[in-house]
Amino acid sequence: MKFLDLAKVYIRSGGGGAGCVSFRREKFIEFGGPDGGDGGNGGSVWAEAVEGLNTLIDFRYQQHFFAKSGQPGMGSQRTGKTGEDIVLKVPVGTEIIDEDEETIIADLTEVGQRVLLAQGGNGGWGNLRFKSSTNRAPSRANPGQEGVERTIWLRLKLIADAGLLGLPNAGKSTFLAAVSNAKPKIADYPFTTLVPNLGVVGVDGREFVMADIPGLIEGASEGRGLGDMFLGHVERCSVLLHLVDGTSSTIAKDYRTILTELEAYSPDLAAKPRITALNKIDALDAKTLANRKRSLEKAADGPVHLMSGVSGEGVQDVLRALWKIIAKTRKEAEPEDDQPWQP
Image (cartoon, rainbow, N blue to C red; front, side, top):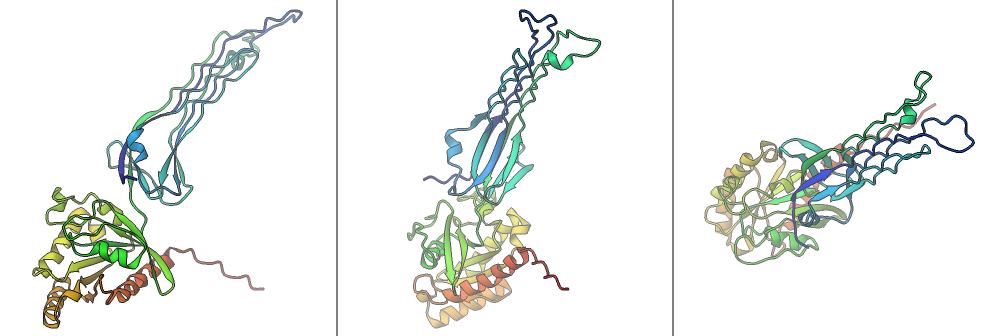
């Protein structure tokens, strides 16, 4: 299944049916009178977050969603049939954005969440509604209300607890494959990862979700490489894991490159809790490792974890550090239990 995280959709709710002008004309009934029914309401357009989806690819092949209009009213006080609603089924984590690509209409972060995107038009009144003591035979009826037509954007941001950052070939996919059952593509050339990958990671009997996005390069915020188009998938993460390639001779520059691109994309994302790890230490001798660790600690102005996604050295320590922050975030998000009643 192809991955798609942005789609443009055209929607329109159904218009209401027109009211009916009708009079009773039945044999042996001395006084007739108006009996025109109301028109049916038009169908509405909804969006709902459902399980089992992790891409918006369905909206590449169908972009237009038009709800049906209500039927007109009929004689004998019969109301027209209401138009059927249309429900856009989207993955959990989908943002619904207005046509200006800035105004967020809704953010569906839980299974079952629904939002009304376009309300169906009301049906018009039949002439029976206009009957009064002074107007015994009204010959007017209302037209149905028109539907709402609009253009929206669907933008998917994956739901993950931890996100992986780093330059291409920093070992992000290797790390994700080593700690989860995910099977990302791994090769010895840059930009092996072209779409985000998710994996469920276990540590000390606990589990959390980790997201791996394509590598960033200098100038990604200006569209170089794959640009920063996938950074939105780590915006929801509680913590970021910044992997730095230990075999690189420009450790400090590599670290600052990623930090600069994060700040250019979103100051809020750059301010998220971040753990820095020097990867591929299995390929370094003790002296080189010490020098590069010192250089990275100076650039990061903080502690640096040493690890190797291939040999597994230091991996568990990194996972425990990630879980420590994730657990704290989850605890803050949980509602406080009600205090037990005491007599």
